[in-house]
Length: 130
Image 1: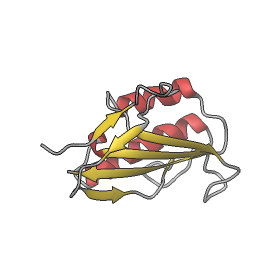
Image 2: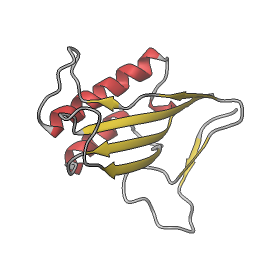
Image 3: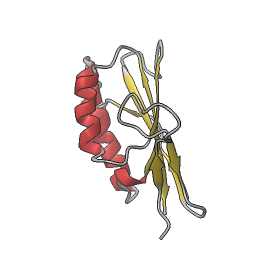
């Protein structure tokens, strides 16, 4: 059976968070890439606080996956951009609601601005359908 595999090689340090160093996609899988998901609510409003934007972003991620018939198991890579320091205690709660195990590979960057001045976080997904 073809499936997405994830691992953390024994010859290197463990990840500093809930992600995998390596995610391998089997040949023939379909690649699905999303635009960066942001913290807008269902009416397109952007809350002022980062925590509210994180909550909305994860809601939008779930809806995006559902629209393609995908789940968190299909996510192979996550790119996260934030304009202010992330409250990791809160972020990890939302992350672990989405990912129960088998974390995808991840990159996080702090940037000076995103596409709209009120945005504080944006999360892009790379997914594979096997």
